[in-house]
Image (cartoon, rainbow, N blue to C red; front, side, top):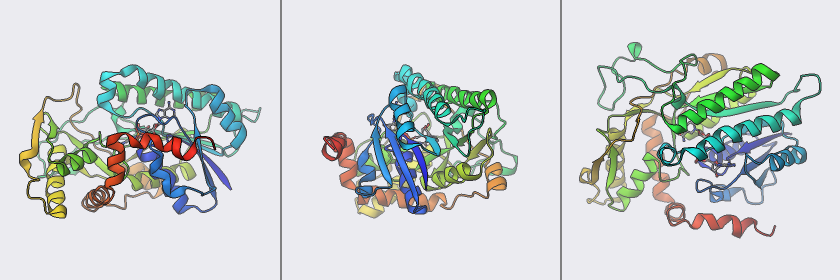
Length: 367
Ligand SMILES: NC(=O)c1ccc[n+]([C@@H]2O[C@H](COP(=O)([O-])OP(=O)(O)OC[C@H]3O[C@@H](n4cnc5c(N)ncnc54)[C@H](O)[C@@H]3O)[C@@H](O)[C@H]2O)c1
């Protein structure tokens, strides 16, 4: 029975990953280490209550003593490091905590894993460490001359995409901290022969995403007839991947990816922000029958500083080497996601009111 140490497993992608892994592998154990910042929400994992395959540890990835104790007690075979500060706007307001958590935290995870796994002869057995990174480390791509109505390139054969050998050129404090962490992961591999691998995924969407990010924010605001703030001209393009497809990629890279390598993860689902906002307006109006949800709610606001224009992933390497492909087309994924937020008003209400932060106390305090 393999043990996975998952950090940040109470966040959006981390909690989806924990659920995905326990759904798809019966005989594994997951030790979930999370500091429960504003972005950590154990309610995401309420369905696992009483499941002995999931162990939650309230700890900070920067804490050497606490993380060493987790390695000593649980002897994990694998580490998947999701824990991070993840919101670009917050990184512009407060870059220091991004350097602390995303860089120092990663260095601490690497140091603790190496100390626990080194067999004394420079070997690490079958252990593996996967760093969850982002396509934002590559910087921005130009918008192609010809676009489809949804913002995707009309001629993808001749458009630019991020490849694993695209030079890193981060622009925001968030992406700079993630790029820096990636360099440390590579340095651990190259210097100590440490068994690490990196994934760089495009924008994720799906259930349990904190409503500060584009898609859940727009669904929430539309439902409450609040303004829908759109940065700049709304034509910034992101490559959207349904979260379970990201989880599947991490599972596959951890199992069979080549150590020391980077794997880009994306599904050629490029969409302009304004297109996404219009889709949400239309689908939320249709689902609720609320005629007050119209495009009049859209308000264009001053653009984000240093806003990258376009991201687009070439996922050829992971497809060719590991056979990964995205299972959820954007149209299906966005409909499923909107339905999830409509069906889970309590989750949204707890997140927006802050009540989710009491969950740890209620469920775990004194245990
Ligand atoms: N969301 C995306 O679209 C996307 C895309 C590509 C890569 N990523 C990467 O995936 C990872 C997860 O992203 P997300 O969107 O789920 O983020 P999130 O903000 O929803 O979750 C982050 C989690 O990390 C925890 N955390 C923060 N600081 C910590 C610390 N010091 N110690 C322990 N836990 C801590 C938080 O409590 C939270 O549970 C990040 O590394 C992010 O860079 C995200």
